Length: 393
Image (cartoon, rainbow, N blue to C red; front, side, top):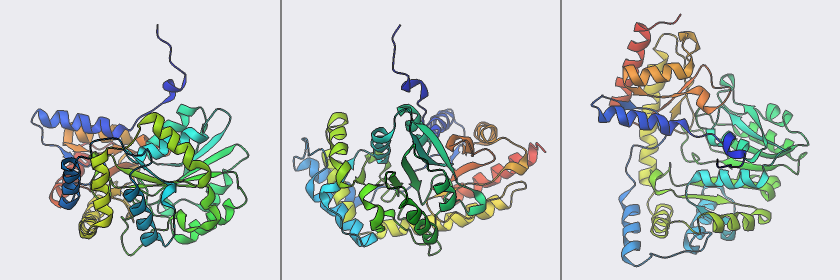
């Protein structure tokens, strides 16, 4: 019998991919499935980005690159951060990675071990908890509450920090809730973190360019007091509809960048060379496709929220960022994962049950409005009809 380390018995996964596989299987059998489960834009990668990657292939960029990424791309990331956040950063502190998850993996691997705590948002991206448990660290949920419009509370977050805390993970705009934490709350958190100088911070800002109603995204990078222990996660997947390209970037403080680089050398050597040239074109080229996509998401957002709130037993706060709605379904009498499964199998609508995003997710489901307005309207009709025909209360 083969023996593996105990960590592999604790590791979880992202159930959205299991739902995607089942939805694909049902569609292949001829079922009419509307997928509001998977979190990826339904837009194509802008053509100038595709052409830049194709040109890189034709120009012979077929070999290894530096583990941290090609210099022009790291410089473009640094320039982009300066443009968007007004902060000067050193390209030498930028690490190009094969997808945003990798930054989580590296940061949690650096700080996680038995006997320490890592704080993470709950409900939140499931890989946070999965990786924390893999390292043997204790995952400590930071409650993300509906009554707070799914923004984190600085006071509650700070109250959970102890002498065991090594890393604090934050996410705004947030998956799965669409919540955006306002500046005043972030400022309060940063001020409180000054009392905990040994706690590192991982700020997941992958949806940083997707906010609505004039809401600003406040990057943790803009606070100099914590910059020497801040790891910034961002990338191209959501903003430029490049999920399958597996392109992300992270910014590391001086004390950690070489550790991250060495992990990269050991794990993936370097990111796909032509894809890096595509990412370079994304940052340095026209941004109209990004603006158009976010504008379209904004319209779908309102259709989704209005449609959900018209269904008996369902209530949905208006998300302020990302492309997710996180409705409260407690009054329907259904358990979250039971309902998500039934909606897929019987109504042909793929959604994700709230518990797949954390222990505090019961009573909610996640819908992605990264689908056409026509499909969203049909999906909402199916959900309403299903609940009318299958009451639990």
